[in-house]
Length: 129
Image (cartoon, rainbow, N blue to C red; front, side):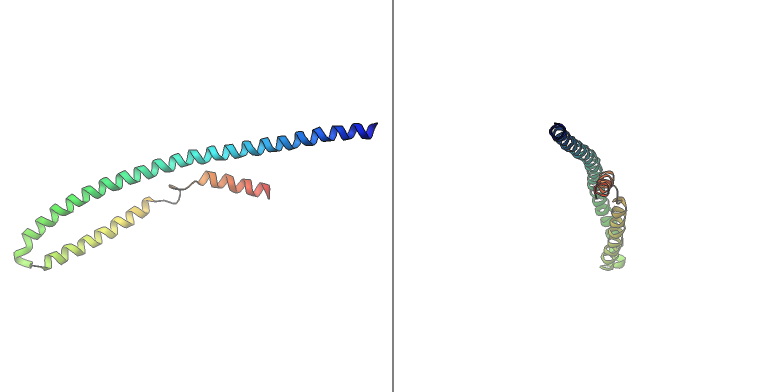
């Protein structure tokens, strides 16, 4: 009788163990999805701020450049002629390069990524391997 009794106890234990494992795996998956959703919200906010600042800065810069260009060309046309247009073009090219470098520095590696989620997923992978 004992072998039959032990066989019956092993089956519920195995089923219980597998269901517990599945429950824990699902809970782990849900927690990782929640963490990713939280970080995606932060990324969305950072990206929205960057776009708004970029658009407003671009509009203001365009108006300022148009006004200053018209003033400089009007004041210098008699003395320099077409050369003033070349000088203004060079200045604008340097200014555009500086703005591009500043925009790239605003995009730090962690501002638009999911560092905590990726670290947790790496930890999960290492624990499972």
